[in-house]
Picture (cartoon, rainbow, N blue to C red):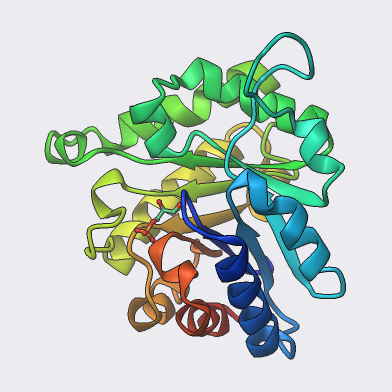
Length: 250
Ligand SMILES: O=C[C@H](O)COP(=O)(O)O
């Protein structure tokens, strides 16, 4: 039985005051929950503040991105080891916004995945097809390449102690989530790809769904066999809504 994981990706949102309010409210509404892992991914500038506020709470911290390099002349970048010093447990790699806006290809994403593991943190590999790719029947091809790029770089046990998030690009921020049945089909496909390399890591692998998850659709998505939680964007900025999603996963 895999323990559910619900992560909030705050993207480029927040102020010192809003971070404090959101985390204080979230701690209050989730303090009794024992059967679900919870994490938030603030913009990197707020990670230290989140670490201080979450000191005694069971809410973990994720980062939204890293550089592949551990140190050196890379102005403006952050390394995975640095994040580890500030209590970060998870790091998103390959989010579709970074693939699209920062030209991150499968090879670079695989290198980031490897760098996160080398730092002793848990990579959350984001995969998903665009609307056009879906329309052209290319969903499995696209996701297959995204997963295989990581296996090629990190080997058959790549997904041991890692997380995958299936985020159809067309569902992100659109208000139109994938149907639970469609999400399940892709999640099952991802698990089979991983199982072809290593059965144990495929069985333990948590595969999150992301893309317009709300309190109103979370339970139906979580009822699917291979949906082990969610990566939540917009709805994670509202403590009440996010807490309701978390409660639906337990
Ligand atoms: O990382 C989160 C996803 O991009 C989903 O965002 P959304 O919940 O706002 O659709």
